[in-house]
Length: 352
Image (cartoon, rainbow, N blue to C red; front, side, top):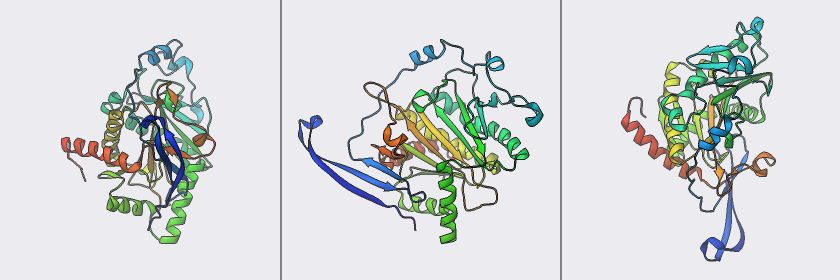
């Protein structure tokens, strides 16, 4: 039912310096996202393995000025909620502190400081479950907003992990936005899901999960309530998708979070093995009462490119709104699935 549309185009022949100047014919594969119709470009060129990177100097330089998210500075250097509206100035639970974002990207924009540690590497993100715990806590603040402002209908939870992902503060944190209008991509997801349901009388997300499992080209794993896959038209070199069991993030329960934490830990383990040092993620919520949607997440790996440690984003991403990738989703899924199977064999409860 889904249209996995793609077009492979050949480029000119050139003499390749990496193969003793033998003739090489370039090739690019343009893929259309089955829901949004946004395009991505898969470049047929050998992808180089990501090399090691030391965070030592980065951590030291980030401490040359006071970090506002370090415990001793939070009270004096971070913003506070209006207590008459929220009932608190800062929200704290389970070691997570939620504050207003000093940069208002939407009607409501909040930050969850998820760790007392200034630097948290990928291993600690996995073992201490900083992200999933932060999401649970920030959801309580979003519930407060939802309770007093019915006009705020569009909610997402987001993260820029490490400077190569656009994070201006090294200290680990996640962000959430809520408002009366969706972002471009969130709006495309919601509109596409509604249009698909109107035409087919079935959920796009249910259909996607069924077809991806049947094709088994980009399917990674299913853990009770969360479905993990590599999206057909990726948003970056390594793009991992997660589909939740509920329409709204506000309906996620303990079983949902337990399943999500398991899958997320495996995906981060996979990224760590790929020597990925930064990533972006966004968790999108559906609108109340619209059961054709599923809350879903995209995790896009970010990295410095050798040898100059250049950023991996460029005019194609930022201006053309086009994703150019060297890593094919089918290869990403195969490698990630190997990690999934290995990790689930260690802890088989809920494996599917």
